[in-house]
Length: 121
Image (cartoon, rainbow, N blue to C red; front, side, top):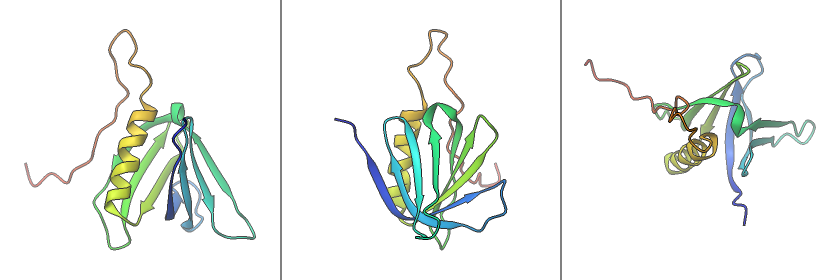
């Protein structure tokens, strides 16, 4: 069966638009990342095809939660702030699995890396 994971109380900010962060629920399907805002008036949905994701960066946890930065091939940059570190890690791992297509015959894999604050190396 198709595994759909959902995480509630996620904040989404789109780095390009100046809208303030929206609170909503994040859904992971086999093909898309879907974010549905809680605001009843708008119920705005953001859909991102896994194949459109060029990189995923897990950033340092802050007081508000664990940020994930998703860069898309259309230059859209989305930041998700996930309250629980464990959920963030699960989403990160799932996205890497989903965004990485079957490795092409040339063995090149899309650039996916985990960002760590390098301690003065």
